[in-house]
Image (cartoon, helix red, strand yellow):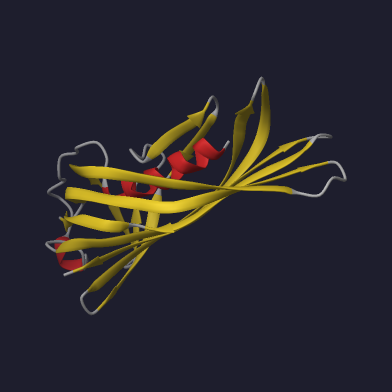
Length: 199
């Protein structure tokens, strides 16, 4: 199960990536504070956990918290699309698995984890909702299958602009299933992530 939470952590930066989409010229950029702006990628911070429960047997929880380092690239916004250019980063952290079974004390294992995401460029369309939210929808390109029947979708983000800093916040709380050996068990994935950009 720990590998599944690691995949999730790497996927969060997909908020800035995705399949290429053609810009919709009918969008009104005069009311969109992001339209026509370009930002440097500063960091991705994430707090994530995946809980799998097998009735009558026990529970396993994977936890990973990190802030990326060695960040690179820029993100440019039009009225209805955003393009990431050279987005790359390194995650250097550890993840913790806490397993419980019956009345036994919890078993806790902490494992180091490091990965580098090579600079990548792509773009995706979005809709501005109100004045502070981006929506990608149910057909979001930001979806990853963690195992059979368990797909996490990032459908949107809340944003704030303060001076020269743009912050994107996304929260996911999704029920699904994961495979534990030869058994498929219910799971709940909770992720809170923050992407920080600056001019």
